[in-house]
Length: 274
Image (cartoon, rainbow, N blue to C red):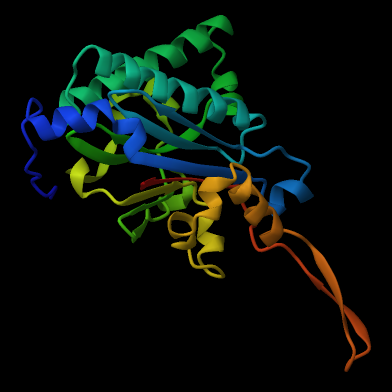
């Protein structure tokens, strides 16, 4: 059951001031790294992300392409852009994110865009399976309210509280494109909802971060300034963790090979209050 969130009046001086300064209230850092298994299989990084900051909102999305899709990185890149653009369009129409209709409209809008892509390929559903299967994890920050949402698996942390979305049965998450066959088969899940004035930090990530949290403290990404001062710092950190090393074991007189710790593509976006 979703917790009720008491929001300030959108016309209150406090909210109007926050609206005019939303981009100055928060900063973000981001990065992505191809997983070890995809390197071995000569595949591309099938993750994608996008962050959009406008006067009235901040939207961030990470998308993870289906591992069995031949070119699902295409869908992930398209998805990250489509979701953030569709959110912007709805907010420009004064839609309210607190209402279920907003998320229903978002889904319908996105499915129509996917239908348009499929139509360009003469309705070839093999094209859908090869290119257009991807998960979605995102956050939307408005002057009055902040939500995190998902369609599929991944990881979310709000104000330091980590939530790893459980793996779906048979490792088959509800990809948006499944809605092309049955619209009721997919829907956005609201994971967190809270007043924006209470937001200190948000992390969204693809499920590849599940390996990272086993060896690193994930709170470093919103606590340490270096990730926000250097736009490439998160990617460098992920690269270092996935670097293969060969070191000598002098006692055994042998070389020891250490593989990278990130088996899957790993992508994350962090937003924090300045």
